[in-house]
Length: 485
Image (tube, rainbow, N blue to C red; front, top):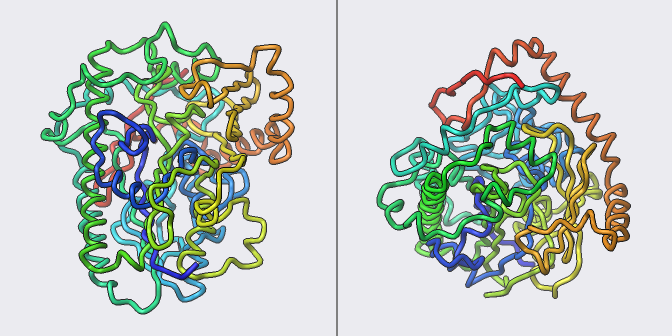
């Protein structure tokens, strides 16, 4: 393909269903919908880990979490594994970031030529409390859900600055002779679930569709889900008006995010960059919104592990929908190809593929992989997703199997059925071609224990506490203590 500029826009915790272009009947996302109209929408795109720090490390390096060791939000990317940002810089192509990185920071070389107002992990280590996997302190997430509604937050303010900084950056680089890559990372719609009042008023909580299996009588009876609900104090179920109010706030923040992205996309057109700039929009993971009795991410259900993924620009098919499964690790070869750089011999074993070719081709079966070793999970969980099935392997717990072609809401687990055993065996065989799940689980826990020991041990880490949301640049982290199991 002809080398072009690359604008890679990523949000944080955007449920894939909450875009008009993905079929939602109520949410207002006109700017992202227009991006989909003039480009290609990937119907089956996934994160490689449904929590911030590992997902972003995988995106940066094009490698799975178990390959790079960024297991959780207390083990951030430090630049020691080559990223696509390093690759571009090595070849004389300017790569800049604006907004949330969730990397180590602390003067680490992440590979970008410039980082504008980056949000990185606290103190260069992040949420180390999540590294405690053996008898960890449980967390109470209930206050943030009860307090959802209209108002203002540092996240809303930060994303307006991120859009402002992006527009200013585009103006400064509109006449560059060589292609560039701008990684523009918004923090919305990540909690807090606080929305601008004018946008909150758009959504009547009583009219919003409810997420799958939101009612306690329908919660999936699985040990891993039961543990998540107990760990984060999601059980007992919230009153329905509270769930609806929280959903309305989240919808409104999605619309706010769309407006900020629209400002940047308008600047691309106004500056005459449309014909020489490719644009990608995605998110690092999704949001449950109370589905399965869970709020946030963490799981391998669609609302958590699926992500929106849109591509537009020169020679990208317009109005096309691609069903071929893809994931965030495909970003590395996609970005490198867009700007005219080359992968090196060190990249020969990258598991991802360039999405430019996938966008041009017909739909094909392809298996994508995800894993989770972080807060709220006793043991590792692994996902395989192909065109028909999603298979979830839990260390020490029963597997799950969903036929997504007939059960897109994943309400009917096929794993216990006798007729599913051949499918389960085949998918477990494919999983073990990628990893040894028990060995990787043990390796993750050993690395997490080493991190805890290096910081003074379990009691010292518990005494430090944790924070619900990473602070924006200039904001102090709001540490609080958590109870024991």
